[in-house]
Length: 163
Image 1 (cartoon, rainbow, N blue to C red):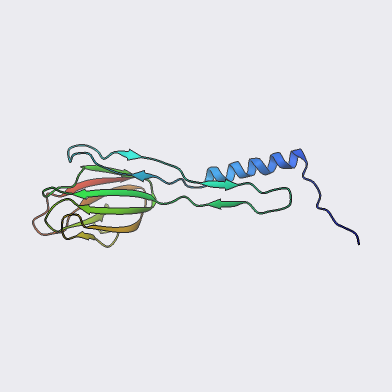
Image 2 (cartoon, rainbow, N blue to C red; image 1 turned 135 degrees about the vertical axis):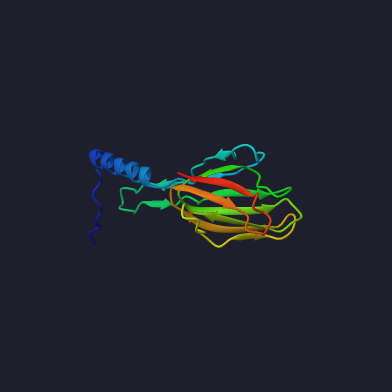
């Protein structure tokens, strides 16, 4: 019985494979976490974190495995009163996990309007203090109006900049 062995990878082939892995991982998207806790008169705080893991293939011909980054998270608070917690929000283009939390006793909605004034997703709604509503929304780069659609709440306005 003859045992077959796989050929060994030369140093130059290992270098090329490593360079390809680096180039491919540079093309992947990184997750961004965007949260805000600033007063309504200031911009929301922005924190960016990456979460992409790459396991290089071995000389035995194993495939390269890449774990996709989690979507960005945008946290928006309503109240207290008829206002959002910030006047300006920023996030990266792509899928964004939006979390809307009510810090007021009144019902509020959260709508994102594009440059044409059209809603880009189903409105999020919070009915009482402490309630939350969440959705994954895909944004393209641009500027969006952030509003509450409850009658009489037209003072609840902010801007979302998507880069």
